[in-house]
Image 1 (tube, one colour):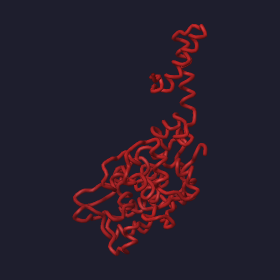
Image 2 (cartoon, one colour):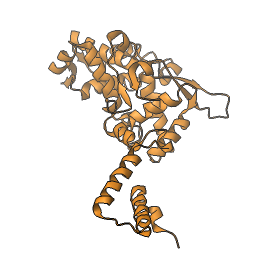
Image 3 (cartoon, helix red, strand yellow):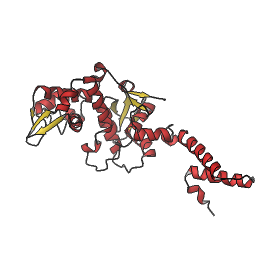
Image 4 (cartoon, one colour):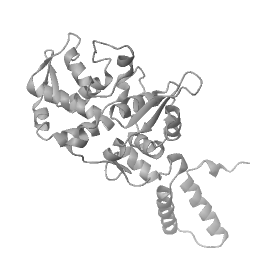
Length: 297
């Protein structure tokens, strides 16, 4: 007959085993001793690194989930200076849009997209995107230049820009943000990581994949990113914690091929030394250590 306690919470099982051992030894077990033992067991459990968390403890993972990129988290966001923020492609693009709108309002297309001239100028400040570079597009639309679209979404969600009667302009809040470029850039960076649903750019409605646990993805990149690894490699580690069904490599596309690439956190290559379809591989850049602090490796 199977011991049903095998399926219990490990802390509860440990307490039950301890109670049985104490009773066999003839020692009295009252509620006070149980509570003391429970507190000790819980503290030990929460502070013990776990292999399926890649060395993080349950307490650290809790902070990764619920306090991402703060001082409580093992991955925190650094305060940078203008020269450092200028190295981050997506931040450059968002600040450029804000500066453009500080000079003039923009008349949007009939479908509500940015004018082509603005898209082209903003795109050149970011990372080259495959669909544009591969087809050598002369007319770059916002819906093809996803990083430009992302920059606009960030500013919109921050309440720094508004659309009225087909015209895009800065809000009073946006004008105020421009008075302190470093703070604005930091907020843009922070919001790109935790404020925008990356499922905006694909047809899959499961918004949890990639968006949930972004600080953990940054942790994984720092831990393994010194050498080239495929997106599947990172997805396998991610799915040990977040067991979402992901048969279309949504995690890789959202986090590595898009966000981390747009931020300049990774360089990419197509590995043609394997059998087709050739996998994309990723390696961290020096920007990772500039943007983030890691409490331990």
